[in-house]
Image (cartoon, rainbow, N blue to C red; front, side, top):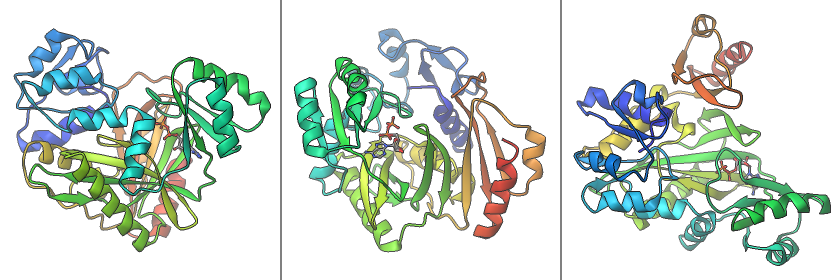
Length: 354
Ligand code: ADP
C-alpha cells in the first residue's frame, strides 16, 4: 500500500530475490508504479483491496493508510507490519504514551483539545513548546512552535482542525534515528544509529556513523527491540530521537522503511529495503553492518546535473521518477568514502552542485 519512492526502492530490492509486486496508490504514475503494476485507487477502495488479497503478503510504505483497510486485508491475507503498529503510530498521543510505557525517555508532552487545555498545557510545559496535530502530520506539516502570546491564534487554528499534543521544545544537539528489523521467527537486527539534519521540517542529510557514544547507542537498540517485541512486529521500524545532554529522547516511530535509511542501500551489508522484504517474506535477515562512513543528501524540489554529481567519487544517484515541484523529495544522492575526512570533502563537492 503506497507507491511512492519507498515502494519503488522496496520493489527494486525485491526483484533479485524473485519477488513480484503490486502497488495500490491513488496517484497515477507514482514512483513504484513505474517499476511494478499499480492499481490507481484510494486505500479504502474495496475492489483494489480485493486484488491485494491474491498476494502472499501485504505491506505498507505509508503509515496513514486507514486502519480499517489494513484490518480488512488482515482478515484474509498476511499483513506485516501488524495493523496494530500502524494504529499506534498514527496518533502522536497514543504513540508517545506507548513509548514512555516501554521505558523510552521522550520530550514532556500534554494532550490538547481546546483553548483551555492549550493554556493549561502551556502553563505546565512553558515556552518554547511545539504544538502538533495528533494525526496526519508529516515533514513538519501540522505543527507550530509557540514562543510568545502572538503565536496563540496560529496554535488555536491548529487545535480547531483536530486534537493536538503539546511538547516541550527540545534544544537538541543532534537528531538520530535507529532502524531495526524483526523477522517472522522473532530475530532482530538493528542498523547503526544514523545522524539526521532537518531544515524546515524536511530531512536534508543523513550520516552514518553518528557522533552518539556506543553505550547510548546500545541502550537505544535495546529499547527499540522492546518496542518491536511489544508490537509483535514483523518488518522494518524506525525510531527518531533527539539527543540532548548524552540522553536520547524518542520523538516518534515510523512502522516502515525510512528516509534516513536510504544510505543502507550502498553503506550496509543488506539494505533496509531488502531486510524489510526478507522479514515479511519469512526469509533470514541479512547483515546490518555498515563498514565505512556514508552520507545521504535528499534532493528537494530539483534534480542536479547527474553527470557532474557522478564525477565525484563514491556517489550514487537515485532519481524517483517524480515530476519536479518545489518542496518535493524527488531523489537522493548517497556518498560513500573510506574516511570521515574523505566523506566530508565529497559531500562538499556534491553540495556545491545542488
Ligand atoms: P513529522 O512527523 O511531521 O516529521 P516530527 O515530529 O518528526 O514531525 O517533527 C519534524 C522536525 O521538527 C523534527 O525532526 C525536529 O527537527 C523538529 N521538532 C519536532 N518536535 C520537536 C521538539 N519537541 N523540539 C524541538 N524540535 C522538534
